[in-house]
Length: 297
Image 1 (tube, rainbow, N blue to C red):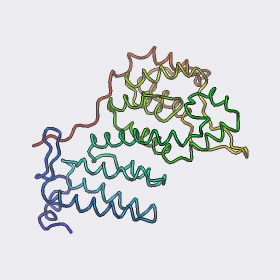
Image 2: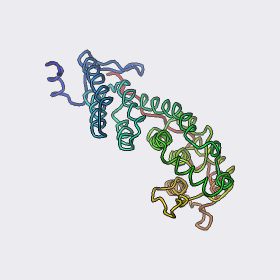
Image 3: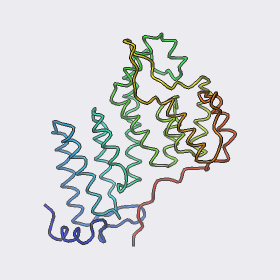
Image 4: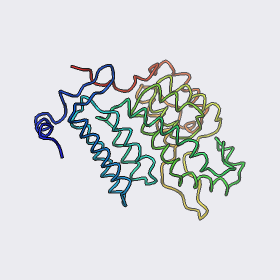
């Protein structure tokens, strides 16, 4: 239960706490908010672990995220760290809700650190989920070497794996955290098409587009835009990262008033690579960085 002093304070100032502060990028919560944070984090972590349904897990995560609403002037880094447990959950519903809760007013620097750390930790576990013949494959040509059935089986296995899905969700969410740490993480072992490539294109700075340009040049094939058919002939209606990448590049062109690659060449990875090189000066040199924490008053 909230202490009387904290309850009265929240009634008077529901979004800021004059006793919570940020100095030299370090958050210090007042005594009441510190106690409340400790109680809620312990309680809701336990509720999440004992939950039987996605709804119960989401309720626990929302209660954790709501802690910040009482002191948005000093968002605690502890909240994103505990929210991270939702991204390791196998449920798509829980994972998507968790990512949404990383948005403001949560501590942006802590959110970025947590998401990049999780992605790094998930990567080796995701690679183990890929069938052995498919590990290390990066292009459509590589997939074709496996044969039609093996390539389809690998695609289906990738879509089903929780760590691969979690990484894709994280990479897509990183577009909301335009920081050079994102560039550094995503440009390593960049494959096409992928959610990492989509995010680099969407961020749209020279530092993000240059590794993407090199990847497009090395890819050297038409970008795929649909999933291969399943064994029964059916096709997935989920968005294909290749189609999303092309759409992101076309949106990038529109934002800067540039003519995109001609329609007859819009699937060409090499043409998009040449386009990025030719228009490099039109894009900002670097990403602005995640939002600074509120300065102490």
